Amino acid sequence: MSNTWYLYLFFAAALIGAGVLGLLGKRNLIKLFIAIEVLGKGISLILMGTGLAKASLLTAQALVITYIVIEVSLVATALALIINVYRQTKSLDVRGLSKLKG
Image (tube, rainbow, N blue to C red; front, side):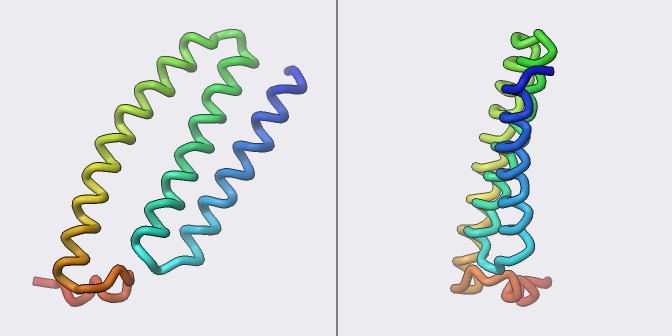
């Protein structure tokens, strides 16, 4: 493995660590959503770095593009759900979601 792979791995681990820290420490839905996005960017960076290190960059690029397409649909769905939660509870706090039980 080359030194650049370790550099990619370090930054990807930092992004994943920041995303997990954001997921564990926040209660606002928007901040949780941003933490999930940061986590996803770390995963994309791991995929690209591993593809570069294993000399299969085209496969890694195809995987990352597929991941980005799936992530876009996730973003649209999550933002729609967050907007509906805000309309119902007038708050973005996770603890307010218990009011939505039917």
